[in-house]
Length: 145
Image (cartoon, rainbow, N blue to C red; front, side, top):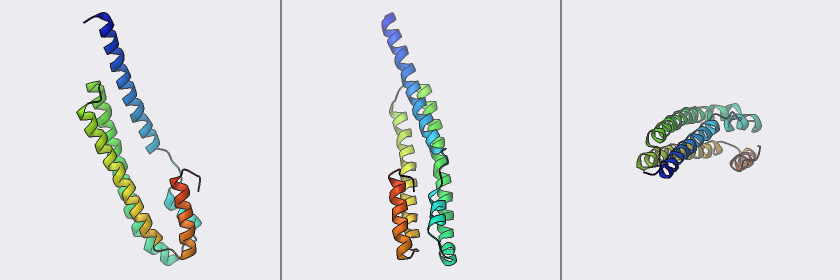
C-alpha cells in the first residue's frame, strides 16, 4: 500500500469515528435538555378539575415510566453505536442494525406519547380541548407554548 493510500485510509477512519461520536454526542445532548415537560405545561395552563386530575394521573404515570424506559434504551443503544463505530471504523451492517434499534425506540416513544395525549384530551371539556390543541401544535412546531 502506498503512503498516500495509507494516509487516505487513516484520515477516512478518523473522519468516520469523529462523525459517529459527534452524532452520538448530539443525540445525547438532545435527550438531556431540560425543557418544561408537556404534562407540566398542561397542568399549569388548563385549569383542570380535581376529577380530571384524578383521571389523568394514571395515564401520566404510565407515560413517564415508559418515557424513562425508552430514553434509557436510546442511551444504551447510543453507547453500543459508539463502541461499534470505534471498533469497526465504518458504518456497516452492525451500525445499521444499531441505528434501526434506536429509531425503533424513538418511534415507540413518539407513538406512545401521542396515544396517551389523545387519551388525556378526551378527559378535557371543549374549552380545555381547544387550548390543549394549541399547546400541542406549538409543541410539535418548536414554538414556545
